[in-house]
Length: 116
Image 1 (cartoon, rainbow, N blue to C red):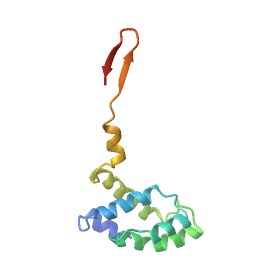
Image 2 (cartoon, rainbow, N blue to C red):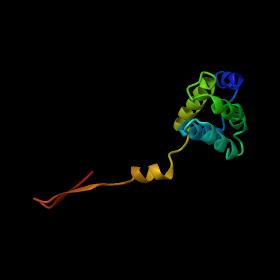
Image 3 (tube, one colour):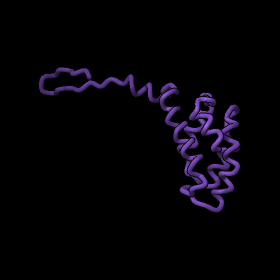
């Protein structure tokens, strides 16, 4: 785990878009054994580096809470990659739909439309 984080910090590992998306999903998870195991099972192809780290994580979560110091390096890496995903990944179609929404307010007294 530490080696992967060092490689990322030193620019020797540039996560793929798939890895960034997977990290974003992991960052949103409730960190208990079952969700981590489910994430491991459904990890997308190309996210092997991160999904391999989930084996030990699920085992640790069987006996410890998500705030355990043993999990802190992985959680930090996931958070950093999720932030990177926010910067690099294009906005989803759902977000784009809201950006294009136009609102009209009617002034009932004058009957004029104000376009925002």
